[in-house]
Image (cartoon, rainbow, N blue to C red):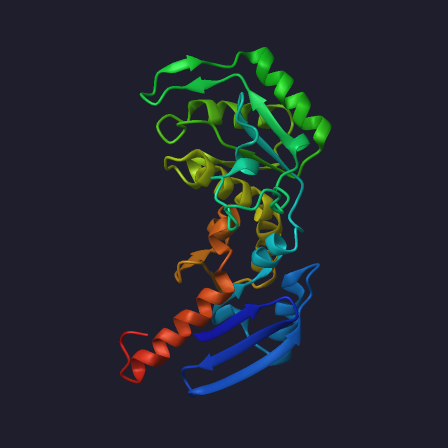
Amino acid sequence: MAYLGVDTGGTFTDFILFEPNSGEVSIHKVLSTPEAPELAILQGLADLDIDTGNLLLVHGSTVATNAVLEGKGVRTVYIANRGLADVLRIGRQSRKELYNLQPENKPPLIPSKFCLEVDSRLGADSEVLSSMDDDHLQQLCRQVDTLEPQAVAINLLFSFIDDTEEKRIEAALRQHGKDALFISRSSDVLPEYREYERGIATTLNAYVGPLMQGYLHRLEREIPGARLAVMQSSGGTASAHHAGRYAVQLLLSGPAGGLRGAQFTASRSGFERL
C-alpha cells in the first residue's frame, strides 16, 4: 500500500507520496481550486500517476478554517429557546478592552434575522416546563422555508440531558421536505453544559458542514479503492463520512497535521517534549 499525504490550503495543495516497497518519497504541489477543492487533489493524483486501488490518503485541509475566517460559510438558521436567540451575539461578554465604552464588536456569525425561537423549555433537572405542539412546529418549518437556508443549527437549553425536543425539530424539518438540508443538533455535536459554547460549536458545524461534506463526498467517489482519512483538529483522523458530518472538528485540520509531523520528527531526533 502506498501512503499519500495531501494538505489543501487556500493557495496551494501539497502532496507527499511514500512508496514502502521502494522507499521512494515524492513531493508535488498544485494550485488549489477553492470552488471545488477535490479538483486540485485529483489533478495531483493524475500528475503523480497514482493507483488509488491500493492507497491510504491522509488529508489535511484549511477549507473549513478559511470559510470561517472569510465569512464564506453557507446560509445558516439558528434555532434556540424563546428569549435566547441572541446568545451567539452576546457570548460571554468578555472584552479585550474592559474600559472602552465604544468597543468595536465583530459581527455575529449568524445575522439576527436568521435566529429563530421556539416555545420549548427544559429545566436543569430535566423537567419539561413547556413543549412545542404540532402547530408550532409547522410554523417553525414555514419560517425556515422563508429564509431558504442551506443549514440549520438547533441549540436548546439542557439538550445534553434530554434531546427529545431537538430531535422533534429535526424530524419536523425532514418531514416538511427538508431532507437535503444540513441539520446540526447541539445534543449531537457537543452534548455538554453551557449553552453559548455548545451553540457556537453547533453553529460552526452547520456553517461549514455542507462545504466539507460536499467536497469530501465527491473526492471519495473519485478515488475508488482508496482509504481516505481526514485530519482532525485533535491530530487524529476520521473517515470522510464522519468528517463531513462533524466538520467543526476540522477547523484546525491543516495546522494539526503540521504539528503532528513536527512532533514525530522531533521524537525521532530524541526530543520527547516539543
